[in-house]
View 1 (cartoon, rainbow, N blue to C red):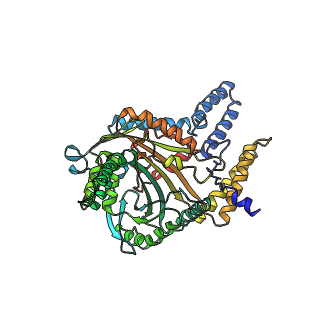
View 2: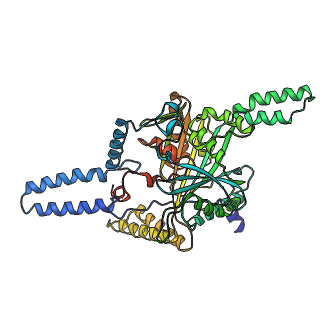
View 3: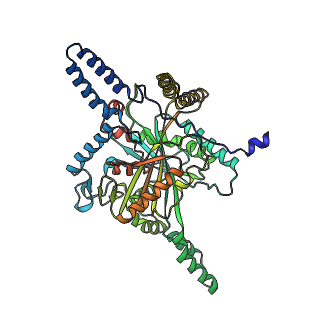
Length: 499
């Protein structure tokens, strides 16, 4: 029996999207509107049949945009709102960005565009004396630190060790819900072609002048062939804290937040040691500026590596943005590159293995630079208990609406009940999402990159769709900048829920 359990691979699942409390998938506001409309139609029949018929037609026309959804779960009203917002943005020139000496933004600097335009970067030291960069976004009062990881690969690693990594990663994420002032986290895995600069510098620094001719010939062949088939893989974890004022406490300044986060940084990085993240160290201000600068203009990557080898680039935060950027409906042009960002609309259904995202995060020959970002927003214990209990009640309500039980409804009730049991046992409840950004050097390569993502997403058991009309914001959210997109939307939370 023990041998059978050891040979059975471990699976993961029960990824739930909370059900709405309305009727047949409608939101609560839409359900109340439907009931009010039906009552009005019934009362109108007492006056005139034609008046009742007119109200019924009007009710159908009003409810259709709220009830009809596409295969990704968006209603017609949501799609129409996005179209109108994009039309207003493009007509006012809000999709264009120009900086530098000829730009009007930042008085000649190259600051970041869009949601990160007002961000600032400071540097402090943690409890171990290590320097770390902290991004401050004044509009939301958020402060973000970024941890660079040298993730261990799964090659030649037994499945038991991989399961241990996954278990510790789940515990680490669950513990974030108890962090004071913690808001969100993101994990970014970026793959890019290796320019060969680091290899060239390493060989030049360790080559002897009297080396044999065969050895020198072999090294020259390595320098010419190795970068063509290799890739760089960078893993970064961004942790966002809130310095906003709370009951009885004033708004905390960037200096206070640097002390608060710096005291917790050693424990956070030490907790990652058992998750397979490898050596986890906080990124400095220069390293973070270089990473963001390269993301907006990949052509400067070799120059950044050469400058880093000679003592650092000296990049400042107001030099990390692009010189020019233009957002289109389905892609984003920034300096000499073009990018498309997809968002996950459906998590893996059923049970999956621990390597479900391996193909998605690995380098791909059809995408020059790829960035996969997992977004996390953990609930506190009190919020998590309330969310799972409400979800269980909504699942029961939906299952009881039909006289003949459906297998899907029964499965939803079972899954919701299992979630409440796990939360009661001390497990955390976390909201999560996923963004995929593909960056290419020419417009002709966009179709090939889109085809590659369309093939990778089903293999990862997820459904994705391009972030139409918000490519610039999605591109910035996929970077380790600590942007929490729900707090930057134009519509209030209540209006978005009713839609």
